[in-house]
Length: 71
Image (tube, rainbow, N blue to C red; front, side, top):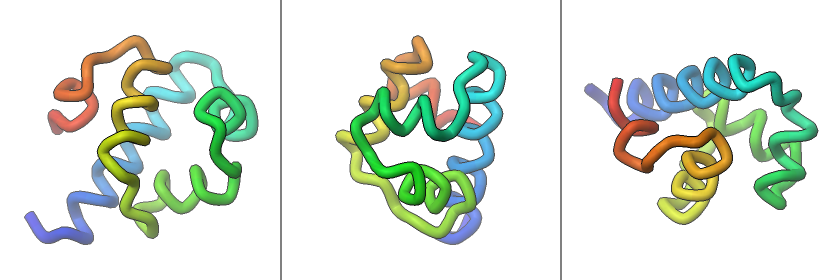
């Protein structure tokens, strides 16, 4: 899997999980203390979030980090 495909898959998974939990992008971004536009870039595979942001996202979604990265 290329880096681009990895980031796109990660973004799709984050978006799907966020929606399943009932979070809007704006609310989820506020929960993570990041800008909504940055979250949008992550969810579209245009940004490469740090491991610390991914850990924060996983926690906010009620997951372990490895679960977020499994696809």
